[in-house]
Structures are given as structure tokens and as C-alpha cells.
Length: 236
Length: 272
Image (spheres, chains in turn red, brown):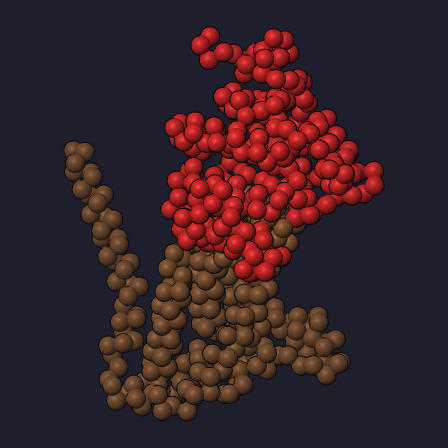
């Protein structure tokens, strides 16, 4: 369970977000500059809110009132940036074991290999990230994030850097994985096609969550021009 | 007509390149071709050579370690925390590069000399820096630091922030993130900067002469030995110069092999 109730001003953006996620996938959509990426950075701990509170399964990540602001590495969040950010100086297995520093060396490799196998990329262990396709990179990055058993998952435009074919394939796989993991997952997206992944869509405009619901609910009662545009049937 | 202008432009580029290239190459050529083998061997036996070579290697190695360690911390701070303070720090680190070395020597003397700002206090505690071997190291570090720092800042800035954030989400502390992600990814730029900085330190003359003096075995580095030898024996000066040039080229070659992807030394200053 993720509970978010925070405010932060940055330049022209006045962000006030109230949002909670159970063990479900929420698609975060909105026009450019609405504050989606800023919200991710606030959740990750790269930025601090001016006020409010963020809690994750009873663990307080941030609480302005109590002066709590956990460091990024203490938040137990899995993060998948748009370009997947694999470390180019490490091979695939090195990328996955990076996050397992607390385990013994043998266990580290075993656990990393387990996760790579789950995503069907264990045979690429010794490859350098530069030699992988976009889809392979995404799988390795997911294995790397999940090997640490995060409490929640943040994905920033997970399919944006893929070609259309890989995008369709991975979207289907991702849907199955998300159902398997049963983790709270927040996906920032520009693509209405990603709605199939989500239990719920949250629309952010000018720093506020203006509407939430399933795709059908949003389509039935669009609260803004952006929502009606986003939920337009592909053949309309 | 257009073709005519184009070919004249091309010819001008060619002529300019040839002229400047020859001008830059000629002094090096002069060093190498005007010295007979016997004169070179004679120069090697010059009593100035041994102590000066040893001192130059020792002091530049020390100043390089000082500059690389402190400079890396400095550059990381500046590169990862943009803001007014970082801009001010960056400007401070560039100052020595635009100050004439002789002026740097006077400044060092007025800061750390016996009657200097800090030197007077040090003197009361029995610490004298001016005209000692540590003064040589300080002069070299002062003039060479900007070359490393500028290159390191540019290299650290090129490290994708997402990689650093992801490293932190994977449990790495800020220090481990610096060590395991920042340093390896910036390594080519750091090595190039270290090479450039070292080359500057080896060649350092003016600041050393004013702040450390020219005492054989204590503060007389290779460039000062060349200067001293010039007064009595041009051949010896030439032999010493050749050794200096050879060492510099050898080190540059090794560093380039260690970091094949590194930009050529100096290109960082332009980019940053």
C-alpha cells in the first residue's frame, strides 16, 4: 500500500498530489509539464516535498511534520527509468548483482541468475548492455530492480524507447508480470495503449490529480479535454 | 567564380595549417637533430641531471596525487550540485590557469612565505615552506590543478543522472555510487585530465623559481636544471630537454593506452 499526500513548488509548477495505491497497477498520465516526472522524483527521494507525507506499507518514506526524509537507498523502491539505465561499465550479471551487495557472493550470482531466467535473458549474462536489444535491456533492468524485492515499482515510460513490435510484445508480457508480482506499481505513460496494463488510470494536470478510474469510467465522464483525447477509441 | 573562391579558401586552409604545423614542429626538431650522440651522452653525465630528474618525478607524482584526490572530490561536488556555490568554486579552480606562473609564484610567497598570510603563522610554529621541496610540490599543484579539475567536472557532468539515481535505488550509498558508477564512467576524462595536469606540472618553471628557488637536489626540477645548464653549456641543456620531452611523450603514450576512449588532453578545457 502506497499513500501519497504531498505538495511541492518548483518554478511554475505547483504540485499537490493525493494518491494511494493498493497492490495494483496505476497508470499516471497527463500532458507534458503536468508534474508526472516530478512526482516520480519526489517518491524516489531525488527531490523532497515542501510538505506532506509518503508512506509505503507502514514505512514512512517522508513526513514533513515529523522531519522524516529517507534517503533514496532506504526507500525500497524499484525504479525503471525510460532508457532503463543499465550500467554500461558492467555486464548483465554485474548489473543485477549490483543491488545485491548485502548477500554473499555465491548467493548474489545465484539470485541474479534466477531473476534473469524468469525474464528469459539468463543466456545474456556476460553481455555488455550496449550489445542488447531494447527489449532485452528492459528485461534485464526489471530483473535488476526486482531481485531486491522492492515494496513498490515505479516505471517511467517503460515502452517509449522500444520499436513498435517489441513494444506490443513487451506490453503483453508486462501485463502478465505485473499480475504475478502483486506489487503496487506506478507507470508514467503517454500512450493510451498502456491502459491495458492498469487497474486504474490517474490523470495529472497542472500538478493535481484531476480524475481517476478505469479507462471505461474515464471515457464515460471525461473531466477535461486531455482525458477525452487520451481515452478516444483508436478507430474514432 | 564560386569554384575559384572555394579552391582559394581550400588553399588558404592548407597553407595556414602547413605554416603553423611547421612552426610548432621546428623547435622539437631542433632539439632532436642538432645534437650528436656523443654530446647527448655527455649531457647525460651532467651532474645536474640526476638530482633534477629524481626531484621532478618525486614532486610531480606527489602533486598529481594531491590534485587527483582533492580534484575528484571537488569536481564531483561541482558537477552534481549545480548552483551558485558550484559556479563560484568552478571559477576559483580556473583562476590559476589564467594567472601568469611568475605571478602565481609571488602569490604563493605572499600566502605561504615566512611573512605571508598563512606563512607567518606557520613560521611561528616552526614550519617553513618557501624554498623547500614541499614548496615545489605546492607550486606544481597550484598551476596544474585547473587542468585536471576542469576535465573532471566535464567528465562527471557527462555521467547520466538516471544511472546515479538507479544505483541509489539499488541500495548503494552516495559514496558507493560515486565509486562504482561515477568514477568508472568518468575514467577516460579523468585520465586525460590527469595527463594534461601532469604535463603542466612537469613543465612548471616560473612559480617554482619564485616560491621554491633553484637549489640543486632540493628545489631544482628539470626545467630549472635546463635553465641553469643553459648558462654554461647549451649541449647539456639540450640533453636535459630531450630527456624531459621523452619522458613526457612516454607518459602520455602510456596514459592514452590505459584509456583509449579518452579525449585528447586539452580538448576538455575547450568543451567545459
